[in-house]
Image (tube, rainbow, N blue to C red; front, side):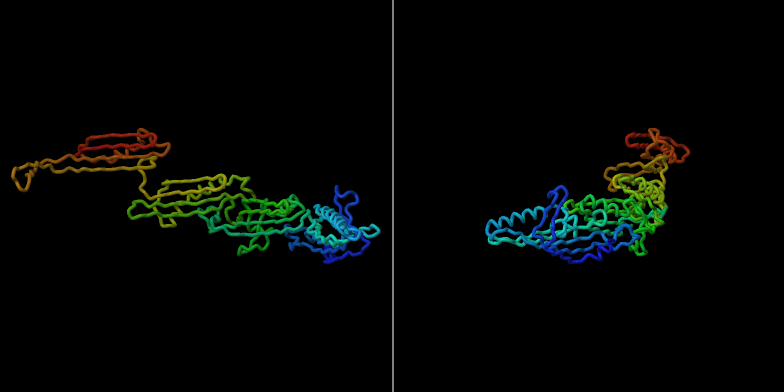
Length: 476
């Protein structure tokens, strides 16, 4: 009989009430070779329901059979005979019989058979589990009524009782997609996908095996979405690639149920398939600040199409993208109207997190004048020019109300110029000789007919890579 015929022929309430029939239960290794027989035979009621799914042949997350499972609800209504005219002995006999039968019915996954009076099999139900057992008894009866409800599952595939497949897409505004070669994201969000398979099976091992077999994107693949981002066919297509796959599962061993989740990032066609991220630019300008400062910061996540992050070192992709963004940072700051920025970085902070696959960065640029000393990371030059002045004599006069007498001596002071330079060198530059710092300092020497160096000092701090020098001239 085909699976379709089984469903069509499943009478929702089929009653076996021939008194000459026999009913007994058994399980391999238990109850002996004859099993446990119910005598007299109870009235047997059968109610059958089919659990199905609505997937099509083109969607392999569905089942290959016409139904997932058939669930039979079996009701037994009968009597236990105590014998005699009733009384405590009869009640004890009834309770003893009831205890034995209920204990047998309490065994998980037993088989129930209904045979004719000639021993021919009428119906057999496997994977039976007792759901309820009720007994009515008192001290003054010779027979007591009982009822039992038994659940039998007829599995169609992989011992699965029920299952559900769910697929969802959501938007995450924390990062965006990059157009290849661009220094900033071209979108304000990215898409993530999740497939969830929930399975109840004969046991949890069957459930997890079935769930993993139904997952479509645990090893990568393509997802097709329509223009609004809605899913019209979660299999095939090729509009989005699956990346950064992470799976998880939870198991209820007592119920034989498993929930298996596969989460991933969706990468659209025409966008960079190795990174997503967020990039921001900032202009810092104050009326009392001689320099404008431009800041480029952001966070990047490495992406690997068709791979799990646990199998890939993602920061390699993220750091490569950071270097590309850094090279275009001045152009990005130009979008804020900032011009004349220096090519050399003012400050740079980069964090490469290998465990999360991310790179976080902050880079600053400014429009300060170019350094005159080669290899300088910091430079400060101070110039003090003291021109020649008239020399006069101060002559105190006793009793003079207007103070001393000031008298021109017809002489003038020397001209004097003081210059100092302070430099912090980058690694690999400078030294105790100051590099070209002294040449820069001498470039500020005064122009005169006669010039003398009146003072010269220099100092080198190797731990700070700091060089300082001062020089003074007198001239005419």
